[in-house]
Image (tube, rainbow, N blue to C red; front, side, top):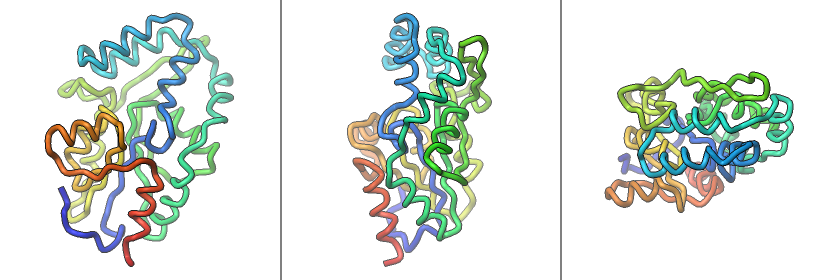
Length: 225
């Protein structure tokens, strides 16, 4: 864990989780609950939370219960707002020539559309794939790592691709899928009440707890002062 006080963002690479980090709630969970035609998804959710299955198997099973058209899902996503401080965080990063990198166990199509509706440009997004077929959502997992089946998207793998020697790796997240990449980072911000924070505290690992992105914005703004 990086202990020295940072002078600026200039030598950092900043990674963000998406659901319940950039957004104020878990959008993917809400999509499943809102558009499910039966309760079969609940069994997969329970087994995933208890560690019996990984998130890929969970998502594959849950999406079989979901029925929504592409236009219907776009209409829903048009009402999703990101944390208002995310815009200001991007502005601070842009001044240092940085762009945010989003690592998510959700779907790129969902994330890109939410970002666009909120007027956010320039973020790199790494997540799972999604196609539509006769009202069904068909997932794909281009970043799945069979050697680490807990996650549908191996965030650690994509984080390490960006890990350039000499840079400070920051990770900002909240949940189970954030544990692996956070453990590979120099500085971790873990959301209050989330499983990432619980894991780090249980294992006596250093991290910074935050309530929302206003805390992250204030930290970033305090650099260079």
